[in-house]
Length: 487
Image (cartoon, rainbow, N blue to C red; front, side, top):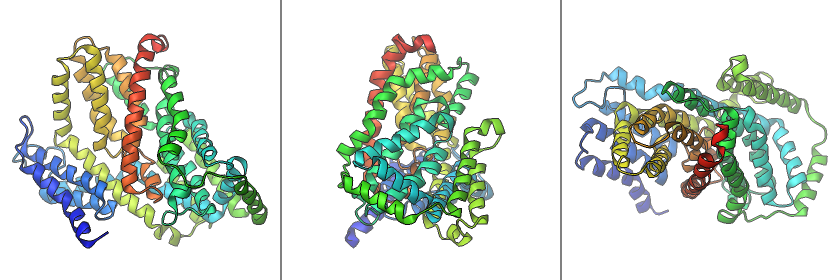
């Protein structure tokens, strides 16, 4: 890339932010809120273009907001006096977020699989068993996620902590690396892994932690709860279609250059013979993995958070000698993601703090109120879905918008609020595919480096819109006319 293009890419986010800010502030929104939104939009453009590392883009955005003292609660009011200490505390709050540290620990767990050799062994077994075709590997990974999904209510733990280390071990064995032939097989497997976990996160009530938060929020908003079985049946037809379609569609739209062959299976079998019996470190890694799975699956029963488990496994790997403390300090990808995701969580929360999201929801409600109930309901679902572009986690999305949208729906004649609430909740998993920061494991898979930023955004848009269309076309009539009896 020429130096001129680099400079242009560096200034485009700044220009976008400035242009938006100098536009007339929309009626009903304060100048401070509009300023914050312009900064946030500049950050999003920066994340798309990546003139500098993504983590640095997020940190720059937080730094600008701290200097201008916009983002904390109350800062959306013109003339508000926000103390410098309050602004700094708000700016650093994202780095105490439990999901951020779960993602960080997931990178370290992946390193444990690599250093112990267990990841290589499992990957070789998968290649030997299902590696006749790359498409077969894609379905194998998807099925593994499907099996774990009902029992692990954290897709970060499930996809980022359990499957990522295994999947990440497969491409190097086929000569595919982030900086060398990523499209050979690595990019395909990475995208399928993320897309599959987004589908399974919507398929089961207990497959995504924000699903549980959403149900609690809905009940507190006066909506009758939906049973586990009712949730499953409501999404089942769309879930089956999307689950079966995802590996194949990726194979068509983002094809691997290596299609797979019997030679790969034979090679994997020979390699398994070379590495011999299981080592002590591999057995220790298995023990830690089982420990993590037990407490991730039974986290509510044991009263232990998924992040606590992940950090405990990371510490255990160091103490048992599976990885060293220098390995922890030297894992640049993990620290980069920590800085990136921590800043985005902060920036996303600021949209609510300054009143911008409430403003958007109000405008949407007033506009949709002029349509018939079905059209208004579809409009609310689409708006709720697309607004996820502004969120760095599904949890923050639920916290900021779900109760607000339920309130808006209650003011529109003819809408079945319980039915709409179910549709909004069912969309939480699949919406995670649209951005590199849309759901917990997204930064983990993006951080692997196999899929470029440009491709990530492009595929996110394609799959995100496809998932939304299938969801609307299949789920709405299915729930209204068939599955309603099970809710």
